[in-house]
Length: 227
Image (cartoon, rainbow, N blue to C red; front, side, top):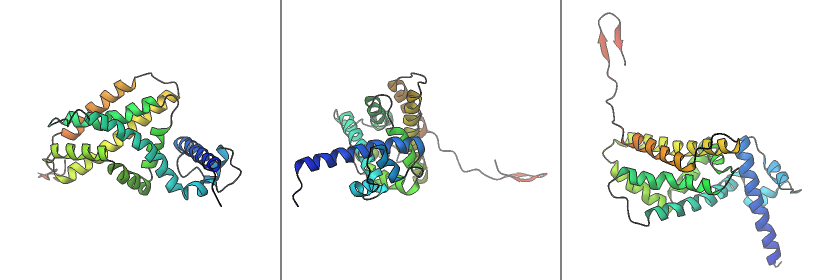
């Protein structure tokens, strides 16, 4: 059977509507609390298998939403790198890492759900790992992570890995909290101010001194004390 252009256009609009509805519902209620049926109903689909028809599974729906936003953010990171590599300055690499996601969120207007949706995805270990691996494969982000990693190669590998995880969580958390505050009519701190604070925090996190492992202190009266 020949698929007409009108049919493809309708399918494209339905697919887009499902992604928009799913992002909002997931952001507000969590991934596990929202069924595929509820997402379909939110866009007026009488077919309860609409999500399965257009995406195959919840995982593929989540990946599609994350990819749509991720590609836009990676484009902004590419612009940050367009003037040349930031050099040996850790802050320069962090600027290109952390500012683009918040600039993208600022462009979405109020309300938006992208950051809160991303925060929900990160609470699901399997999904978080999957979309994280796909994000790190994007060319501009990969270049930034490699460049930043070379400036931090003096750190022990476990420390670099741990701080990298904390950095990802911080970027997501700052965006989600700022997005939620705006949606609820909260303080009107600008996205630029939030970005600056985030960059400062990340530079401090990534370049902090590494302390020696805790050592056992012998107390003749109380026995061993571990500080």
